[in-house]
Amino acid sequence: MKDTAAIRATNLELEDWLAGVDKSGLPGNFKAWIYQHGILPQIIWPLLIYEVPISTIEGFERRVSRFLRKWLGLLRSLSSIALYGQNNKLKLPISSLNEEFKVGHAREVLQYRESQDSKVSQAGIEAVYDVLPSPSNLFSWGLVESPACNLCLKRGTLDHILSCCLKALGEVRSQWRHDQVLKAIANTISCGIGHCKRLRPVKNTIAFVRAGEKPPLAARATSYGLLATA
Ligand SMILES: [Zn+2]
Image 1 (cartoon, rainbow, N blue to C red):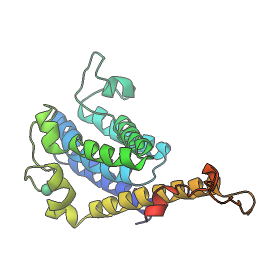
Image 2 (cartoon, rainbow, N blue to C red):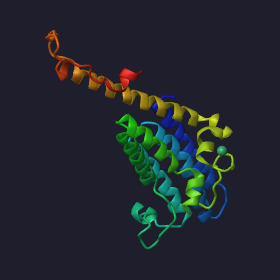
Image 3 (cartoon, rainbow, N blue to C red):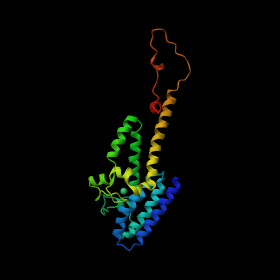
Image 4 (tube, protein in one colour):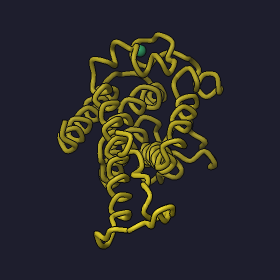
């Protein structure tokens, strides 16, 4: 799916969810709860998968904030800092979409920065997998009340999230994993190309070696990084 189409689809989904919850007739604090535990986790996924400009995220957050203020009976002039901050007087248990987005991206960037070296990346990927915020990990860290998968309510282990959740498999999430793999391959190839360019000899000269002598170091085979093993 094209990024712009995906963003537009997410935008419409957010619109639908907010309007649906708004019209539900539930008490306002229930509506806010549904946002935090139902809408936010759903909306953050596509936003992290595709290239989304921060201005779009801010637009999404403004719309969410308008509803949250209405549902919680707060002043329209109440700032986002007061609405989402955990260190202010209100201490509302609501996360900022913008903040979640930045945290998610920072995690992703760190993961790829570490992956430049193939050995580090292998170890890193395994380590990262063990500490991924899967529902069951979040539950064992005491951050959520249930270890269940958000989509099918089975136990949300990493295994389940990556390959066993039938509901997720049929959806855009399999596209995400596919894109992540392509991203890793593209990174490795572009790294290898850069490496080869640096190693390319300036002139094609023949280094003659006298009988009984060893060739100088520079003339020996040089490593071409991961591409050599491809
Ligand atoms: Zn599931």
